[in-house]
Structures are given as structure tokens and as C-alpha cells.
Image 1 (cartoon, helix red, strand yellow):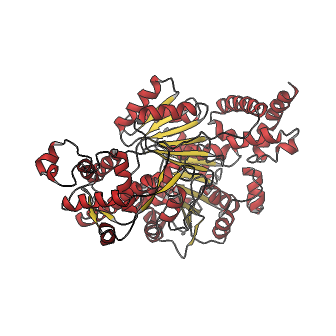
Image 2 (cartoon, helix red, strand yellow; image 1 turned 120 degrees about the vertical axis):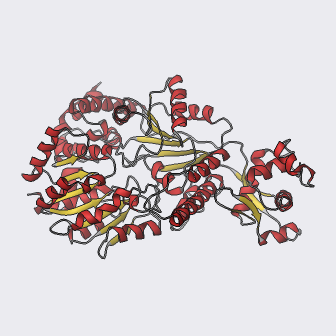
Length: 608
């Protein structure tokens, strides 16, 4: 019986690892003690093992509530490949497949059942679950339960009612990658967790290189970035469906193997495009945020945000889909001021939540505007980007990480007192009623009809910075906002206002300095492995072998072995089954299933 084995035996035999990652063992122990758990762990930290191991070590069955069909399929495929009984029930199944799954559940063939929250309201499903011995309920992507989170889904509100209909209350666990204190409290309250063990392992993903690019021609820069990374998988996120289609056509014209994904295309087309990307038939996916929640593709080497997301939570969760295998990966955000205006428009015109009163809906919108302000600060900051994110989530910030574009870009500290005085004087003369765009145009002396109609061309500050570029003026305004000399007030129509702190500067009693980059562009280099030429050739051979095996098994390539496992094989070059069993990610089942064929390929390459 699996239940009699230790957690370390289960980890090694079924998942191929000899030790736990940070936080995993503590969560597993608490679940085995019978305690409710909330785990807040970054993408790629191994949340699924935290509940899959207890599922194998305890009597009864584990029900996993997952938001997306694609995630269920990925998880079940991976478990079955590791020799674990798992099944999903969702809307894509035929009647025959559903009947077969139910029979397997009743006769004890499965230890884990995956389903979507919407199915919990189905009377037949509830009745089936009451007949099963469900000892553990797992709520994945638990932030979806909170209206203050980035992906609120009303169907998550029914989870607690479903659990109350079971004959015996199971242990309840919830997992998410990002959650502010407000969202964390909502998860515990709405799921009715009893004295939960709450663990936050930290938000720092040390294998990710964070970059923000201010590009004058975003399309040209995007094509350049992707062609520099032509041998690896990546996701390009866009804010709108039209942007997705536009970028998809651009990359397709450039000869890139690309797919697209958004909620407006037919379901069968979305499914095919997603499977093509997951199975490495296409290397680039261009998508809205409708794509990716929980996608368990381990070999995504870069994420590019063509448009700025609306909040830090969404950005870090989407960016965290890179480097899930632990290898170095890149998160590149292409910023332009137009992105801010687009996000404000999207907040203003967002669909109302019928579960909230009008006053509550306005509070949520105001909260969204505030989160957008923080996202904009991230994009315009010259400080350490990793430190900014850690501080946002309540952790101790870094002043220098050495792995973000700001830390890797040369800066110099310059005196901007005169420019600060000009900018703040202009804001005051414009009655502190206008935003960054109009203030910048007035300072640069733009021949704008609105400026003329408002009479701002008569101000003493009109054209006072005409020698400065638009980028330079905006950059200094951002610095003044960050230093609290200027505040951005208002939600839908934000305006610049001068704070009391600005008075000594305007009177010439205080200087203002800023750390500004010396280069016009930030250099972002593609991440490369440290393999030798011969090892890279072996890696190509192992990937080709993996591809053939995955096609035969009808599963994504990374379900056979992750890229990280293949790289480990290239470095260690095992010569026998004992040595092969020491490769990270090689469990007993995979050793028996794939060990000999991979050893033959490695030995053949060595002899050649």
C-alpha cells in the first residue's frame, strides 16, 4: 500500500526527487496531521506536490478544484505518466468517458479527482461525491475566490456550500501564487478554513530575469526579441484580442512558429492552438490573459508583455509562467504611456459584478485604479525591479538584485532641481487639474488645439522645456511622483498635484537628485544554458527522442521529462540505470518506462 510509505519514499518513487523544496514538507506534514492549509507559493515552487503526496499517503480520495480544463488535463497526464491513479471530470468528456471515470472512482482506481468549481453545483456530481470517501479537498488558484484578487470567479463562492453537503468534512487546502493580505483573509473566511496553517514561502523567483523596456517602436523591438530566442518557447501577452491578432499576424509574417489564444476564437481552435504550443509544435503563444492560468508547461523560457498588465498581481503570476523547471528564464515588459490609458479605459468599462452593490462595485474600481498606479510605478522606476515586487507583497525589499534590467543598466545621479521647478510650476499654473500628457505637452510647447483652447499657450511655463524630449519630461515627472513631490490623484481621470513637500524645492531651498540611466536603451540578453557544444548537441538528440515518445504516448513532451531533466542528463551523462535514477525528476515508474531508451541515446552519442 502506498499509504504505508514515508513522504520521502513517495517523493522519490513517484516524482523522482530526493528532497523537498522550501515549504513543501511543512505543508505536507500539516495536511497529514489533519489541519487545513493555505499555501501561498510562487509559480514553479511545486504547489501540486504539497497535496499530491498526502493524497497518496492517506486513505480516501482527494478532490482537486481547478479553474481550467487544460490545467486538469496537464495534471492528470503527468500523474498517470508517474504511475498514479488520477482522473478528471469536465465538460469535454463523452458520455462513455464519464461513465468509465465514475466506475473507476467507485471501484477505487483513482486517488485524485480533478474538476472545475462550476460542477460543484451539479446535483448528480454532489450525490456521487457523497458516496466517495473524500478525505482532502484542494482549492487551486484560490485567489479566484476574492473580489479583491485579479481573477475573481463567482463559481468559487459555491465551494464552501458543496463541502457542507458531504457526509464528513474533509481537510481543506488552498493554494495560490499571489495574494495580498486582503485576498489571503478572504480565502480563509469564504472557504471557512479551521485554524489553518498559513505559509508564504516568499515571492522571490531567483531564476527569473526581470526587465522593463521603453521602446519607441514596440513591434520592431518585439520581433527582434523573439528572433534572438528562436530556439526556445515563449508567451507574448497582449491586453486586447485585436492586439493578439495583430501581433500574431506580424510574427507569422516574420516566419515565427506561432499560435494565438483569446476568448473570441472558437473553442476547438483555442484547444488546438494550446495543444500545439504545449506539445512544442509552435514555440510562441500570443494571448490575452485568458491563456495560462495553471498551464503546467515547464519549458517556457521567456514571457513578454507587449502591453502593461493592470496590476502587479496579474503581472507576476503571468511572468511566473516562465522558468517553471528551475532553469533561468526572462520576464520582459514592454512599456508605453498609452498602456496606462488603455488600462484605465478597461477598468472604467469593466463588466459589473452582479453579486456586489453599486457602492461595492465602485470600491472595487477604485481599488483597481490604485493597483494600476502601482503597476505604472513599477514600469517607470529606476530602482531594483525585484525589490519593488517583494516590497509590494510585504516582503523585505532588495536595493540590488543583479538580475533585473535596472540593476544591470548603468545609471548616474544627476541634479534635476531646475527641471523639477519647471514641471511643478507648470502643474500649479494649470490649476492642478490635468494629467501627465497635457502637462508634458505644455512644457514642450506643443501646438495642440486643446492647449490653445484652454489658453495654456499663454502661460509662462509654455515651452519652457522645449529642448527636452517627451521621454525625458515623463521620466522626471515619474521621479517626482516616486519621491512624493507630486501625487497622482483621481481614478478614471488622474491628475497631477503638487504636494507640500515640493515647497522648499520651489523656493530654491532644497535640491532634487535622481538616478537616471545613461544609455538610451536597456540591454536585455537572451538567457542561455551553460552547456558545452557537445552537450547542446546531445540535448537536441534527447529532445528529439522525447518528442517521439510523447507523440506515441499522446502527452506533452515535458510530461515525459522536463527540459531541466534533459539538461541534467547532458551534464551527468549517466552510464547505467543506477546513475540514471539520480537524474532530477526520474522516479521509479519513469525509470522503468524510459530509462533504457534514454541511456541508449546518451551512450550512442558518446560513442559517436
